[in-house]
Image 1 (spheres, rainbow, N blue to C red):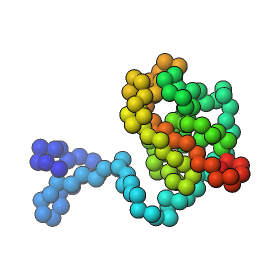
Image 2 (cartoon, helix red, strand yellow):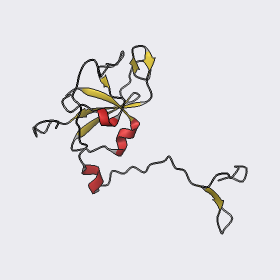
Image 3 (cartoon, one colour):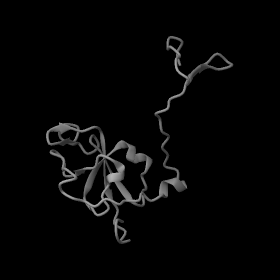
Length: 133
């Protein structure tokens, strides 16, 4: 960190060479390396209901506010939080893009006139494995 940055908290220190170091607890490292974790299946248990999953006003997709709520039986496009990237399995899901990649009108998804946080739009891959896959 630069010298003008104040060091505070338990995650800030000066190392033996005088470098100012601050650890960030809210960062993730993503890779496209083919590691085992990348192929862990996300277990889905909720079923789709029109009343529980609103659609976007400006994009043909349903809003899924939590990764654990991805419906097991929905075959269309879903908007999910960016935390989905921690669970992404390329064998199970296809990433279509975010609001900017997809050039969504107004730049973000809206549900009932309310602007949503950034979303990744995904679709489940159909492998013919049966319930939920």
